[in-house]
Image 1: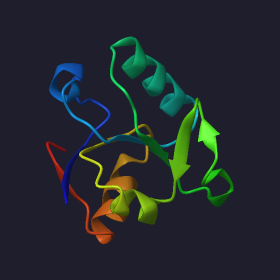
Image 2 (image 1 turned 60 degrees about the horizontal axis):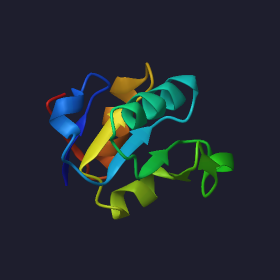
Image 3 (image 1 turned 90 degrees about the vertical axis):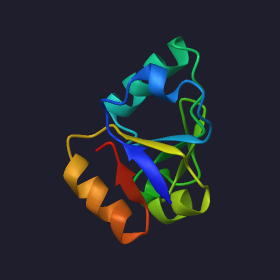
Image 4 (image 1 turned 135 degrees about the vertical axis):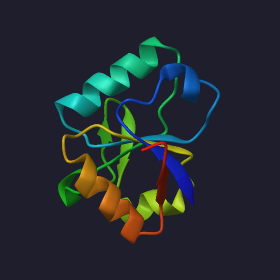
Length: 101
């Protein structure tokens, strides 16, 4: 599965996409969620490496494990963490490839 993986993805580029996921539920993830909602873009899921968050909502959006994210056929994944490189490698190991990185 090929996805966009970058915090810098332009709103215009993802406006017409579905199945958008934010990787990282921290403060930056919550800010990204608010910004996308303000732009009229729906976020389908959060993804996080913290198992304590899996299955729970953050800002009304369900949190998935990275493995679950693979099964959800996300078309856009936005890394909302300074650990972009690690997230990219982790997703690549799961068979999710990055484009426009």
